[in-house]
Length: 222
Image: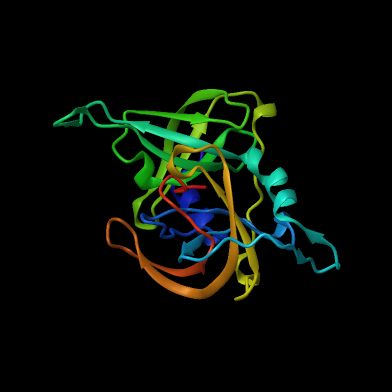
């Protein structure tokens, strides 16, 4: 089990909260090669781009190749709070995304996706759905760490990238579950670095990477 400080460690390794209608962690890969590129982004509006970019060794990865590598590690997160009622009855479940970080079953998502939930479930690319346990939170960076018990073969960890190597103009791919849809890919570029945004608890998050890759509700934690 990861202690709470490990969630903050993920932030230091390239994860911070981002904005896509609501705060959202994004599984995001540099088009130059996924192994160098899981990071977090802030969304602005722009059309998706699909062209590939060269890697440092002269090779290129297309959006399709990035998706094929990364999508199995992206999950859908559903959080239900049966204690909250609305005029129409029980509140609908919160839907978001997450991504696998190790073979032990740990998954990173956004804190606001699971906040207040009394049951959390995770759906994998093979459509298996399992219950998840909340094992760490950091509301000030809008991050949460989940743990699931499932076969290690069902877990495809995504490598964390080095955000210090990101430059304005780098092409990126974001993978998540917008509007509850299964694993959608969008593409764009890094628009700016060192942005400041606020977590839902109003804590200031710095060193945020901004991209114009479309990120919508449900992408949170992707």
